[in-house]
Length: 425
Ligand code: SF4
Image (cartoon, rainbow, N blue to C red):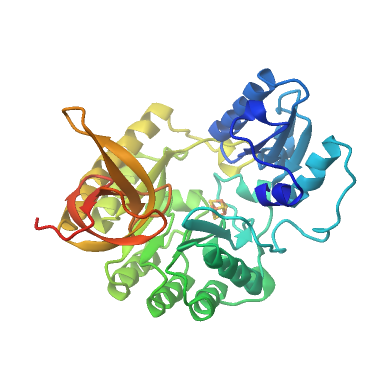
């Protein structure tokens, strides 16, 4: 949206108060996210400067039942797959005629060169989801999966690398199912091979949101074939007790899940495994929760994200019996996090003395006990996905947007501390 507006002659402003138009890209996935989006809109409306317009874009307006909750005073609404109409939406506020250059775009399948400023970029390869997990609003918001054509994905990645991207992160709601709606059988496997062959100068390719199914085994083999594909598997499991998984309308075959995790460990050097889980799903018993804890202990994931169950109107789970009190869901979440912290700490401490390529993303400052400040570079190793995992802090100023080899001298629960020169530990 920013690129389309810039192409049309609009310029970005640092502070909302200085802008003629403020666009809020909302989220409608969970109640908490809806509240945050509505709160942001309301705050902007309350502080609106004279003549300023407010636009609500994104998922929230796509939830028809919720669009009534948008605060009065929003001047334009764009649903999630209408982002490409932002130029005309803003233009119409100033009486400009519509421009036809993106006519025919369905919000996903048209690609264009976008502006890019950081060393890491997300590339959305599909949108929507063909599953119907009992707790999830996404199929309602997004509809069925629509995959971007492989050539469009490739073009986007070529453009991003030309603009300086060192890491491309492929995302969608169900990345493993990529291409199934456009006649590809093992689409994600083919896509990894195509990127590996056609964009050899991409340093890091990362995939997020892998739904557990047998294609993951082939995807792991494809990752092993291409050095650029980082040895990182993000497979949200949500739970690990078959009865809960069945109630969630999720794959309940834990043998397959274990096979996939074992295959990743045996096929990929120093495989890094991430999952996300939900506690407090309706009917979750103490025994079911204990078996989830046992699974976490058994599998020793490198990264685990845990969310308490959030009842969402319109989902199958919303009306389920035996709701779990939020305090219990939170206690269970904290118990998983506590267990995981000890696992992550051990994994990170095992890295002490090892040298890893780190993509430097920013420079910060650190203060010692005496109050003296020193520069510190902040980056990520292949082990860390942007925004969700830990960071690598490297002493001193390193070149932003470049890789440096850094030797880890301390591992904590989430982050690594490293020096750009080899150090003895
Ligand atoms: S696979 Fe993911 S996006 Fe699709 S319904 Fe399940 S949780 Fe939602």
